Image (cartoon, helix red, strand yellow):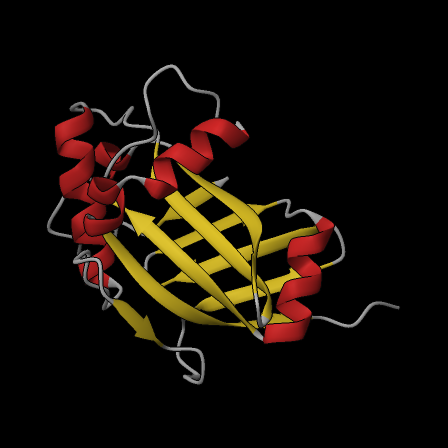
Length: 163
């Protein structure tokens, strides 16, 4: 579930459509990395092309560039970040909030790293593919067009204590 703020936006937020956030843990020699993919389903009011433009406006409004370069914001204390509680998490950017259910290994990696690697792409999720399908996720996040048309940012992440 995502929400967008419509205050003073020079674009039609209905063109954004449904935005999905998918979490997975990638393995490296240095341990697990918690990744997030955020993308529209391409079902905005004016179709997939307008959806890509709406995502670009959203990202620029959040101070992010969909140019495929990694930005390290993991030490910043601004309005962007991820909060993880047992069984749930929330991604917050200026003008955008999304709640999602992460896999336990992803949450473990957040606890180890203290940040997440967000890929927020302007390309819509492949038409007809089920969000969360692992084969589609792997192909989509490995595609160079997807990666080049995305904002890549390390975001700070907090885990809230339980009990």
